[in-house]
Image (cartoon, rainbow, N blue to C red; front, side, top):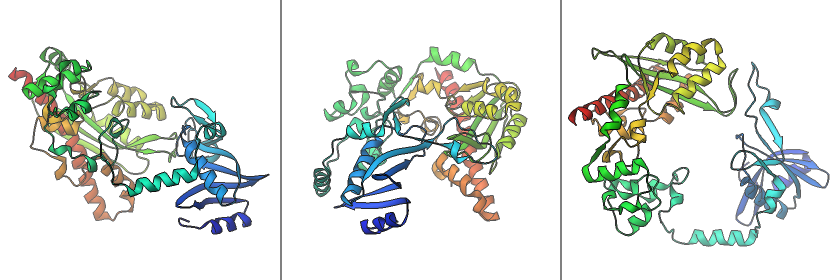
Length: 433
């Protein structure tokens, strides 16, 4: 258990050949070793990962844990990792032996098999006492808050908003210039607006040019490129959005590790006469077939289906479902082949409004066209909130379930209503010239 002493862990090792979640400490540094197994000459450590590609960098943590255990008198002589078999497809029952792979080899950055664990550990030259002293010294120092590329590279640091209050920045702040290698330098030099940047400091990306022009004029629109994009849209127009959950361990048949399960959709349908109707679906448990059949029944057989950021989302979800349930493949293919990505005009810099503040997600784009609706007024405001409602739904009382369904419907419906607002906002801007 958390907080166990070395003595408690050593006692367990004397009593059992297999021990789980052992705790060891050396000075102020503690570690948890998931599995220790007695072998000839010492112990074998096993590290499980809810990942299909444990990376070589994990070896540093393993080496530190080995060193801490060594100070407690536990000699770990070998290591292996358990990771998820990405090719495993669940049948009726979960086969744990097929689900996990045991190996002494990590993966490299490209998800290809890399070096073995011992080779990776040898690359980390760690003096544990010096390392602990450095950490203790840094803890006693006043933190230095400085924005660098590391703050937002790959994924924004979860403490970013605590360190930097961007609400105080202007909408066209140079900090919002996308994929720029010069923006931090420019900000330190006192440049606050994108329009004040030297044009030579732009990296040549179309979206950067759109931001630069919008900084001068509040809004940028490439009319000649936007018009043919609009002209491809055909009535009836379906505005579609899904909500889904991701499962590392497949909970239902025909699912693989990290497959997703769609539990909700919202569908606004606009006819050529301007009438707008709304249909939706919400299901719990293994609702995949009910989801598919409801969507096929409700979505128009003709016309354009507008989806925001569809390639890695709704379109991919339908393709995955057609692989799991090939009897519906043709019907679902007729849906995804009519999809048009509403995010493209913004992602490609065909339209940019300073109100977007360097982002082109639907929640950032919609306020540029209307302030009548807000996610902040909803009980469920994000996709993560929706997932949590789905996960906990079956544990709720009947009254709570009714409330949750209404909250989920309102959230997902606002996504597709936002698509409608954004699409017609683009048309109105084109009419204005």
